[in-house]
Length: 391
Image 1 (cartoon, rainbow, N blue to C red):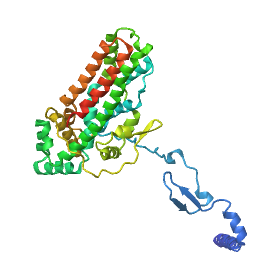
Image 2 (cartoon, one colour):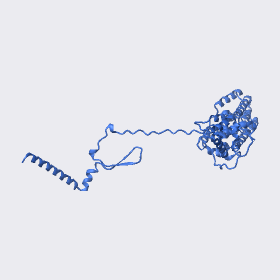
Image 3 (cartoon, rainbow, N blue to C red):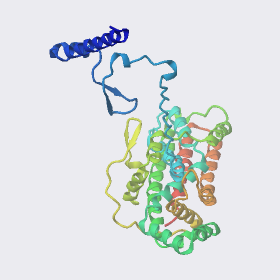
């Protein structure tokens, strides 16, 4: 026997032996097969970060599973959460907060003056509003009311479509009263003037009540007492405090900054001149709620604008038109908005009321005189500023 035949026999024998072993494995009972595989690796579900789907992966033999090296590890970037930018309120809504805050103070201050502290508190609450902010706030509030006139909206948009935006804006710039000539302007301005009449009656009623106490308190010893310090110094302190003005009411801010500000204005419009919105607000803890009012249906009463307040009425209508045109967006508000909010007639009226209050305080000598100053100048005269635009 040659060496080559011996080697071939060895190889053949090894091959037969290998096939026999494989055949024997195939004939093992199922339980033996289960023990040899499921104890090492089963079908698995791999969850991907940030997703809910799963991927089924076929089982791998132990030899195919190898630990990952540092270079093979997958780096998952942290999820980037974009900051949510706050929704900025309409310029008119922001400005109106000052007027609403004043009206809230009128609702909340202690009207029964039973001590010097009560009088001083009322003076500090009602006498330190910034007159310019208050004037602009009333103009803005009035414009919000006017802007909800559907007739006026159509008139503004039709005019813009026919003449172009630039020409319409130039008309507003050249004459504040120009906007009063647009279709629907009477309906729009009547909404604003009606609410102003209701607000004026409210301020006149409260002011008269406080003024009357100046006379009834004269019979009380504490009220007949001389005021301590110099009255002129008291007036100076009020003047300085009014430079910054009173803090804005958080409850009023929630009504006007909220995206549903149109609902607030619709409620005010539904009242017309019958009742002031500020008398209908309901306190719910630190917040103010509006009861459900009926939708605005009947046309507002018609008013005749006083000749010397034509510019004021025109600026209210102009602000309303600018809002309809989308020019009161806080990110790109038209410069005409600020010009109209600084209506000289309105600013002058509110500033004169504040000046009269300071002069009254400077001239007072006894405690009982101060309620007169509050009632007449911090309430009734402010009411005249908002109510005397029309008759």
